[in-house]
Length: 293
Image (cartoon, rainbow, N blue to C red):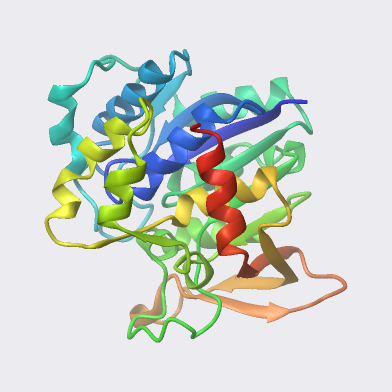
């Protein structure tokens, strides 16, 4: 049976979002009901998403969403990968100001059936849950590439990008009750990486070639690509990829220096959130690349 997915993404910044979308489009058991984009130049992000949809031969509704955080200043005002649009056929016109309404309407049409996958900042989702407070309870699940829950990465800044971009939106989303609420943190997803030379070698299928063009701007200053967002997507279809722990997450809103920090407290019997604690790296890459053969 097909798994119904709604995708909320800031495709066009880091490469993992476009890799994730390519996986969803190639996965035969995925029924991608729609895509919403978030953060700066949301319309260009929608264009990038439309490139992959066209290459896949799928007509997926795409809605540019909110570009600025709820209360803090924006740290992501442009979609740097948009330079690649000139190389690929893409849509140029999208419904304006309708992303949140589209999410609400689609969830209402399929109560209890949709997994909402978020791989960008949570502004769209916070507005959805605030304007339509019944929507969280109508989801089958909420799977997010969001948060840092351990110190294993040893970073000076203990905050993950999607969580800190719009910390108030992040706090709103984590406070809402969802039937299943999974977070794949960057501390775990950082273990699924490939060297750029391996990405260039393995991304030679029709659906992954546009991703290589999107990556040109990134390949100039990195030799590794992280598969953060694809890990979140793959975990929806294979629950053996990630080991999960149950507990509760609170988002820091009082300390200016730590806005968006995700506090994790284990609660193995009554916690309302689940986080990934470990992954099977080999199993992940096996599943990921299997859909492109």
